[in-house]
Image (cartoon, rainbow, N blue to C red; front, side, top):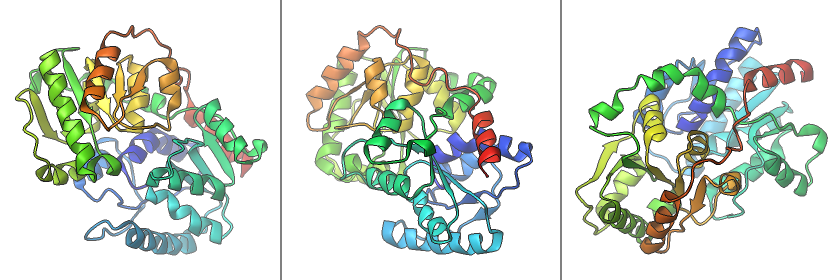
Length: 353
């Protein structure tokens, strides 16, 4: 694993695997080499790492993947693993190529997610990872259907659910005890929460301008604080955009996990381009506007918790926020019954290998 979402989603499973008696090693690739996106989360969630791959000075995908894969190969030749377990669609997941080279069975959690947009690096990664893997563990039946349509063997697909449910339950007390609302002088259900980090939204300054103008429109229309924990990539691009933000749009460095989830649970509405935030918001019954043209979590739209605003027009962002702000929050999250995932996966590992 190598990014913040992977740390979060694997945090409980890794503890349970260790306690189960399964011999294992955990490799951290340092894809998120910013400490606010990596070290803070490893420490906060008490995730033990056996191998840290060295950081590079900057992140160029091709160079970084070659560096990561070379280091993973050394680890494989040292440890001789019987099975290779990964989650997600980041560049860290391309470590499967090394496991495949040495004929190590690969288990892919979060398999089958599809946005059907091949311009997204994540879409290219997730398709490649799925087709390299031996066993596929999608979150939902709709993701399983995607895999079947691509010719995957149904006998190697297991719908066990989404690990975020166990994570949120495991850390519930620490999340509830977060004092972030007091520190930021916020009242529950009286602020918007924003996360924007994807390359397609931040590298294109026209799109980033549209998003900032959309936030300004929302600020004027609703007269609520807009809390934005800014990603380092987004922060680096802001100087290239000629937009003056409204006074009640408050920008902070990335929040830690407990503070961020507390903000999610108590938000009036969330605007995001994150896949994982779409999942969490559906569980918390918080309306979500996804500022993208597509999503690999269509089940959140089907259940009614989420809507796509697109990125081409600031007015559309405001219109979708107005629509979701009037929506009843009585939907049933597609992940609501995804409990005890660790038990399912540990039993699967023991019985299969």
